[in-house]
Image (cartoon, rainbow, N blue to C red):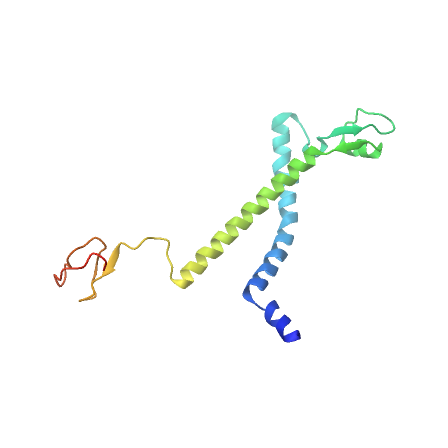
Length: 153
């Protein structure tokens, strides 16, 4: 049973997934800081000196009753709030992480294709079956040995 588990755990896909989870877990706080500390403050400033984390709706007043200037003040008073500003921050963080993962996977796939010798370009030539010269795909006759080619070759 240990041998089977070891074979499973050491497969390429499992290791790739584990590495991806670890890197994703390490990258998420960076993306969160990027959103919270770099991206959202200028956007809030452009919109009208607004802090996105303080965008909330009071569902039930606390003691003392509102209005509350910040989410922290509302929570301190015991108010029940709908924190849609934090949700916006979380969605932006997710989009940044997802885009970064997409770029990383795209780069890895490109490197794998290069290693395997696979290109994304469609072939423009074929090989003459008689003289092995490279000729255009649509050629009906080989320019080198002048042999007539079948339509399927």
